[in-house]
Image (cartoon, rainbow, N blue to C red; front, side):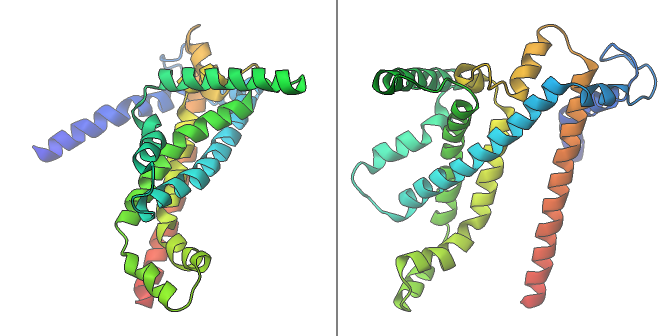
Length: 269
């Protein structure tokens, strides 16, 4: 029964995705009607400059937001795990983790109001202010990812023995050396996991980006969502197949690298 339940659960999750990928190779113009094997819609997707531009913008925003989230969220998680009970620690923890529990509509609206206020203040002070676009989407996504990275890093540090860092300090290493040679290698898996999580959240987001973006900040999810209102096209099936293939390649490469590192570590041990 357990295997049957697991099989049904996996089929429920993966069957719609596999159907979407299968219909991407259909020659029929109707998205969910088989018309023979063809690469017609992949060629149409390659010629769709607007969709390719939105995809490239989404990748750049996701990479930048994930990197910024790792830098800020890693520091926040480290402070919460290693600085003890400092003043306003509870407030700092609540503010750092607020995006985890707030609805995305509330987060997007609050960030929109913040950017509008900052834009008005910049115009009053300098007579000019940049409009909303890719930069504001990047900052908004970094704010979302920061909370997830902070939780992952804090959990990782909570499971580490502080004696390792204390031993390095007793041997004469300074705080920066201890962090660089002991703490950072130990939390590197958590930072990598946080980066991937923040990257995925940014690449998938529609709600927050819809609030804070401008004409020059249309991401791929926003473009796809706007096209779905007028009806699904086979090009979107082809796009989904390419995204799934890219994700499979990245997961396979990560598994290969981790497996190789594990074998090296076992042979060294």
